[in-house]
Length: 302
Image 1 (spheres, rainbow, N blue to C red):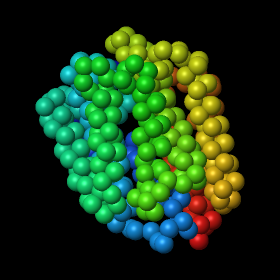
Image 2: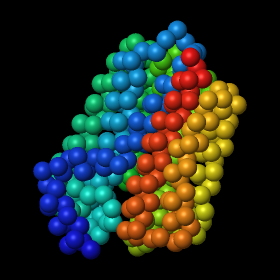
Image 3: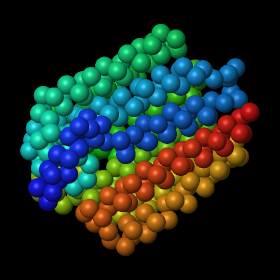
Image 4: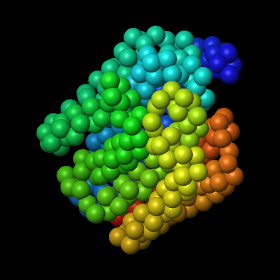
């Protein structure tokens, strides 16, 4: 399996940094900014396109930086050589620990620059939020005691790629956090956590052997699969809650129809590399649901 992964990695050497950034995870950064910005429609005097763009750059840079930190930290510990799924730069030998660490730092710098520009225009409070987000992104799998390997990764994802990113995107537009943005942030957060749950379910046997105490390792295979289904149901409930505040938001439920196949596959017991398709389907569900929810929020806000 390691030889197959290395061969696959070598064939994509020219695109190693794109692959290392894990493009399939990027909807987790795009969707909260999109939904949070849409939730601000009709509340303030008008939207700022450049603020939305800057918030998007911050979110994407933080996502990419966190991915690179995960890559170099696992590579440094030697736990990524037999990994299933996206190319790992260090584990596959495509880049050194120092190179990937530098890529992570560069990504964090991009996030800082865009964040500072936002803070100058919106307010200094964004600097504190940004600092905490960077520390959380680094500590997820980096440092001597990564909390991602203590079963807390799902909490990090829900808080920072759900609540903070979504409600924060509303805040940079209208300088307030609304009940609607908080409800929507829960829907976004649940979907982001579902991505991580599938990722950790796929890697559970290897993580257990490596001593990584992810939530999937802690609660076991069956409960992890049940958690995935619960997260999808909670997403639907949050969208319905948003519909109570702004009824066209229920359009987001159309996107959730894409969850039928991945939920069925998870409940049928798919494991290992077969969950790569489920991961892709979950990311697709996240993106389409985010787009549909955003459209509904905009329609209801104008």
